[in-house]
Image (cartoon, rainbow, N blue to C red):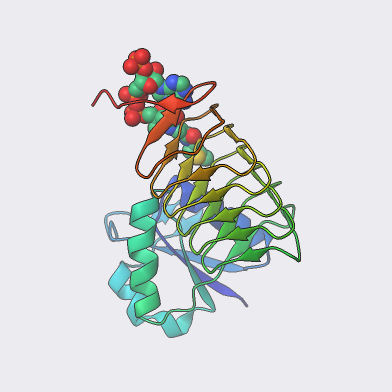
Length: 209
Ligand SMILES: CC(=O)SCCNC(=O)CCNC(=O)[C@H](O)C(C)(C)COP(=O)(O)OP(=O)(O)OC[C@H]1O[C@@H](n2cnc3c(N)ncnc32)[C@H](O)[C@@H]1OP(=O)(O)O
């Protein structure tokens, strides 16, 4: 019996759970601070809070954070690391990950994603369904490459970068810390820290909030 705890009973968490089951984890439960108000996430039980997970760490073979928001995931994974939980990565069996790639702890790689030779993926990052991280890319910690996004060869990113669904980033481009790339965008130039870019070709945008 392989027991996995997922922190974060979210929609993203459901995909982490489903991926984990496909990867051979046969007992999957959630923890979330909304417990006991929330007791189920899809077919998986929510059995306690973050504090409960930390106090029950000996009951699990691994733990992974199932929260899509990059900064929230970073805070929680670091908290679990300080508490010395066994942070694991979860790879869907249909994902292709080069034996010459390096993937950090707490990374999830969903169905049909590809991480090619000599790419590096930082701790806690999400390589979502069908995303492609090409050869020699260097992805920082707690990033999210959304479904069907493509990072061409040698792209590098800082931490907590979010590349939206279906976006493409040209080879050798650098995305600074906490950059957001809008869905469907085509990025042709480096993007400085904290900027949101979108469109074809991508240019800076500003939220209307
Ligand atoms: C499994 C999963 O679901 S994983 C998650 C996948 N989800 C995604 O990939 C979504 C990524 N998010 C986006 O693309 C968002 O639109 C963001 C983050 C780029 C911008 O969001 P906000 O900051 O809320 O910006 P807002 O919606 O106010 O738009 C600001 C302007 O940018 C434009 N804009 C927003 N997104 C895009 C885009 N992807 N491409 C082109 N233009 C865009 C808007 O039309 C608006 O233009 P206007 O001022 O001329 O009217």
